[in-house]
Image 1 (tube, rainbow, N blue to C red):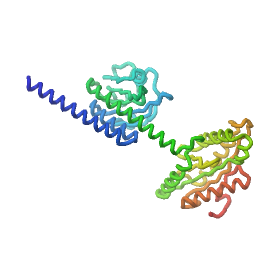
Image 2: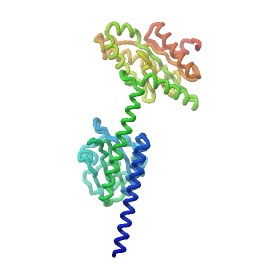
Image 3: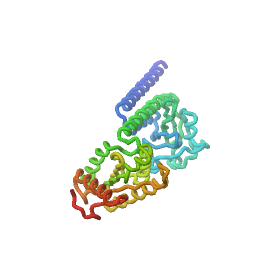
Image 4: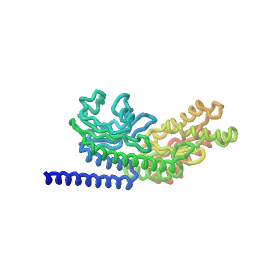
Length: 356
């Protein structure tokens, strides 16, 4: 009996040492990178190892929207993970986890009346652990560990998961803070668009990509007509409100793949990846019309007449095959549009003007 007891203690000690080593590896992953998904995948893999489950996922929680967003997963089918965002269902498992703020176990989903998630049931999930990820008393995400058979979970291992959850919550906080700081560095605070500095970096990157993969690439440059007179009439504070509204209108009008910048003052640029000149001209016309109607419908100066913009459009490879040339062309087209009547979209093909 003594030998048996010693053997059991040895196995327990070895198990604890392995668990601690795994925790150290997770801690290393947390501090070695600020890439959120990389950290969360490492934590998920370790948590699945602790709980001995064949599947799992990590979702971030956005309290303002009562919404979760999938960021890491393992052992689940493509159908299960294709829904990347979902709202918290009233009375469901996730709502109970969020309300309780503690680890929640389901040892048999078929014997759990409130478990009615059709996607999880179709996946064949029969038991699971839900671990809230809490940082400074706020739930920032949920770790799900899934099994495809009913089972009892080891309570000691669940305690170890609490430590892992602390690492995960800290990783989410650090990575989110880092991302927000990076975003502030490349964002114009007035309009919410990207700033001039980031434009140079992104323009070079996208131009290089277009050349490498032989894809078209277009640039739109616009300028608010008579902005100096507008500022003189209504004051700089009102002018700033107009520029902020311009940022909103531009973001509402462009596609998700397009990227908008405040180039400087009242000038704005939109880069359109994999977009031919004819499509870019249509996009520019949409922007011109949206600014004219949008600023009239939401006047910041009380006049109700809004403002207009002059726009230049150019494309690679149609108009130029070098970044500087393409920029010079769109810049000259913009100012030609301003000199020739304003509230217009100008492009080289329609004017038949030579490249500078």
